[in-house]
Image 1 (cartoon, rainbow, N blue to C red):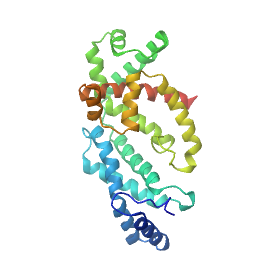
Image 2: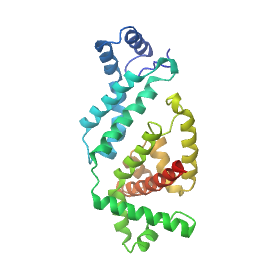
Image 3: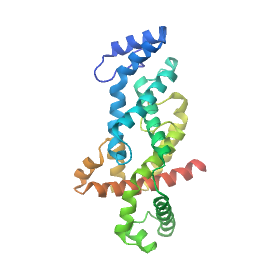
Image 4: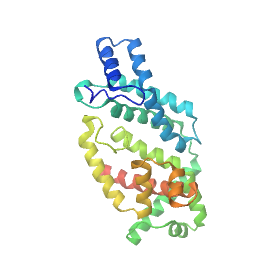
Amino acid sequence: MESSFRSFLGGSPQEAERLWVEFSKKPNVENRNLLVTHYIPLVRTVVLRLFPTYRKHVDFDDLMSCGLLGLMDALDKFDLSKGVKFEAYATLRIRGEIIDQIRKQDWAPVNLRQKIKKIEEAYDYLELQLGRIPNEKEVAEHLKMQTDEVQKALDDSHTFNLVALDELFVERLGAMPLSDEGNPDTLCDEKEVKRIMAEVIDTLSETEKLVISMYYYDELTMREIAEVFGVCESRVSQIHAKTLMIMRNKMTKAFES
């Protein structure tokens, strides 16, 4: 049972197992609340990971509230017979609930969405013409814009692109496909998504690959990545936003094909 009832941070695996046994025997509000309390540190960990990206648009307490809703949903839907670690399953649900709530806010103004669309179309067109992903200067020249104007638009669109890509994965799987510990019902889809994702990442530049790897796999923040590259945080945000836009566009097309 320990494989399914893995504890988190302060509690022991035995404590987590005991709480789950009690809840399975008596699935009442009191036992459910004990489990919620036990896994609050997990919610906080997920929120702390997402907050630096979304802090311009939502406060920490709101993200915690969304995360708790995701945790409670995970508790209600978790199936012991699947043999999955609850922590892994709950992380998917917590992240999914947060992303869904941010998406519903529809904070991106129309003019920003239009500018993102123009830049996205320019990347598509130039990639076909050049046989590679264009750089920001080439996109700026194509759109008759200044390079710093394109970079500013990418910086402004960072959260939009991140939410859009996360939403794509949430709709497909429930979260970013970075672990083999997801819901077993999605494992076949997850393998296919990972394959497509790997193919898309192969088309990126070395810098873009490093940014994606450090953010999603090494779980560094934008500030930490900026320190590694020796550039400002805004520049990393621009690179990340551009990369997410390219990935979202390519993966959407792959999913639809």
